[in-house]
Image 1 (cartoon, rainbow, N blue to C red):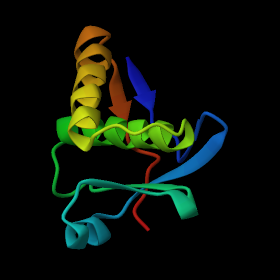
Image 2 (image 1 turned 45 degrees about the vertical axis):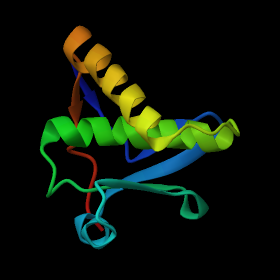
Image 3 (image 1 turned 135 degrees about the vertical axis):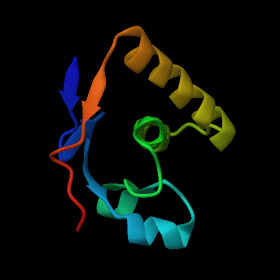
Length: 105
């Protein structure tokens, strides 16, 4: 089942814009980044294969929840949680993320 990734995603009571910015992330040496001040989730769709992009997206969503629930989760634990959610959603439920609406600015 395909699920379209929206350009804006509401998580808890906060709306974040989702966009690709491979150039900015290459200089930061990361595949994903949250800019809470600007309410943005930035992802690198160039350097990472689709399976990793999907997991990175889940990783960043967990960071949004972590911030707004005022909890602290070690980044390695966030990685493990994202991998677990990826296994469940993509392999267990057969969900495929459709990135066609997400653009690079």
